[in-house]
Length: 97
Image (cartoon, rainbow, N blue to C red):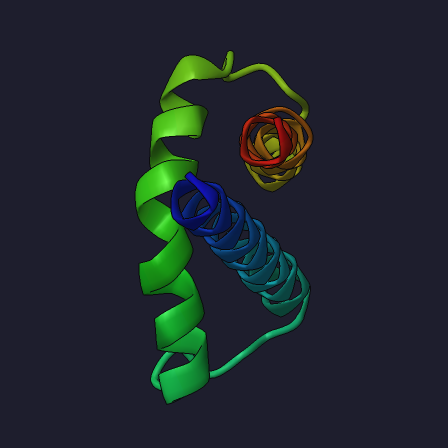
């Protein structure tokens, strides 16, 4: 039984790491959007390709009259924080008990 518990704890830590890494990618994307970055730079292209699918879905759900400010990165970061607090914590508690 301890093998299953250790596996669940490892999965919880891996999910936590991946969510944190993705959150930093979103923050990098937001910072890049504030400056005039070269769209042909491989780092800029990676940031856009990694984040655009989820940000596009959020933009479709938001009303268009938001004053020209893109709140989709902030909403996605809040979703990631929720998943870290709910999903990861739940997996860790299941692994301990």
